[in-house]
Length: 47
Image 1 (cartoon, rainbow, N blue to C red):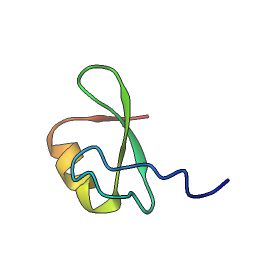
Image 2: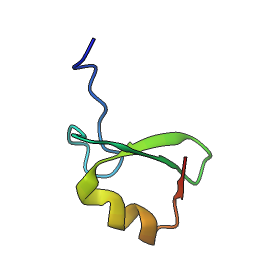
Image 3: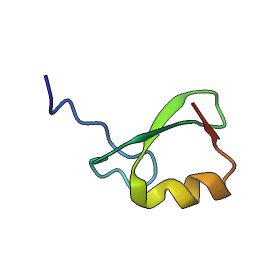
């Protein structure tokens, strides 16, 4: 079923092609393509 819809961890918009990152708390979060540079600056690790 498509349309489940993951939201971006940073901008809270619908992530079109989400990337998986691990937050500081150890939780897996989805990040949209536009916010990937910000996630990498904040030293989030890729899943």
